[in-house]
Image (cartoon, rainbow over all chains, first blue to last red; front, side):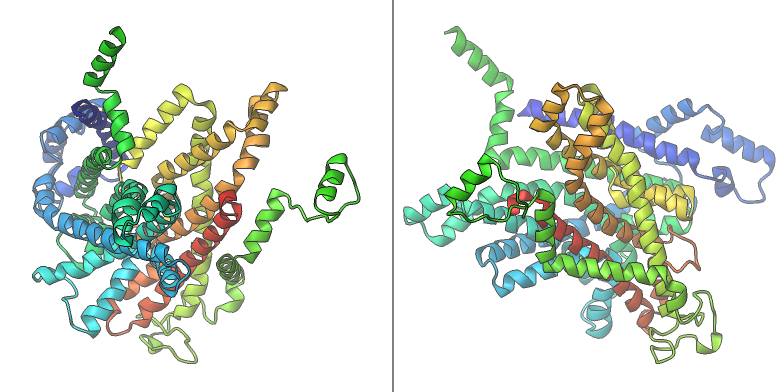
Length: 324
Length: 301
């Protein structure tokens, strides 16, 4: 198991290097001289040349890339054009908001999506099933910013239940969370429904019924556990969409998270902030995917066996058995 | 039904009491099931209507999309301006009608570009396998580590606003999903018996790909293309909304919405109509995609 985790973490290194190459390439094709953005317009040519030398912009590209990787490893994501502070510090200050919104959105989305999916699978072709199906189609088609604007107009402007924009206490998080949850809801509902429909036709469900197991236990203990594997594998993919979706949701709701940070940076053409933010979210996304992969091994017994089969202890055991 | 008769058909007739039952070819069968699917037909009709609107935008739009009438600025929906006007007094209906061109055409271009890049990579990876597959898919892993919309934003932020930049951003951000899907589609047909037998009779490599494998993988790909179209339109609108898509005064739906969002509370019509159009278009493509999937997927017969 530890070997599996270590291998999974080590695999992250080339992926992160690749991501850095992409972002570095984008930095290289970005038009305009960064020095113009950092220094005031009154700066002399000597000052500009000195700054260029200081930033290493005169070095050949490979050298610049190595320096860039070194900087990132040291936690230096570059200097924001607007605030002249380290981008990473600014990002870390804002990260908790994004984390709360995304995490809340995922939890609400999974709970709501799975329960709706299970209900519509158990009552196939009922009115709840059709409403869920149409609703999930509707929300899947709805771009995040449209959904956010509709929610604001209903719950903030018309009903005055929650603040519309900005951070005013915990109620400000409700709508963004719902927005993120609704965006992924259709995905969870559909997958749960189809995988549940498949599972409840299996023999072991009939066996459980035959032995007189209560319907509730059949659903929660036998069916849901088996139906959950495709759902769990989808959560990892969805989290990526949600981290991206957080960008739009935070921009619309004016929540001071990383999404809003990147959104503001786009308007201000603040490239180090955009690229630093994207790099940070890519790192977070990769780490989350590793965690999802590891938790998978616990959820899915078949995978657990295959991981353990490759583990050293079992191999030694097998070898000893063969020898005996 | 044809009059031809073979021993097999005779035997079949005898078995079924002399009755001949209709047998459909896979393509015909898929078409039959597709036309029976109500959601798919509705989706297709909406898309066709949008295409007609886009083609005849000049004739249909009551005003020019750039025509500014300051006297009529901020007017609510009325008989003259069905969808109202915006802060410059431009007719929103006309802008939306012209916007259909941008959304559909650019969506199509994005899909084509994604397929020429990601699709080809996926097909090559799936067909050749081994080292080629490994290298391509590991590169795709890297692209996948950056969430799609973030990828698109960082590309357009670096390259600037405009049509080619946006097409590049969307094609690159969809690279990993497109290549993965195409690879899977090819892997599914690669191991089929008819491919093995064509190889046995000495069909060349490229002929194999284009004559035998792609036509058989086309069903899966069509479904995916339709889904990708909806996704591209969504992404374009999102990019324009964030200010990294097209430049004003292009009548792109996301841009119309973005320009109207400041007046949302006082003049909701500036946001509601473009939002509805975006939603309707994506919904239509998703409905069509779902219908096609039901029609092509043999498991759902």
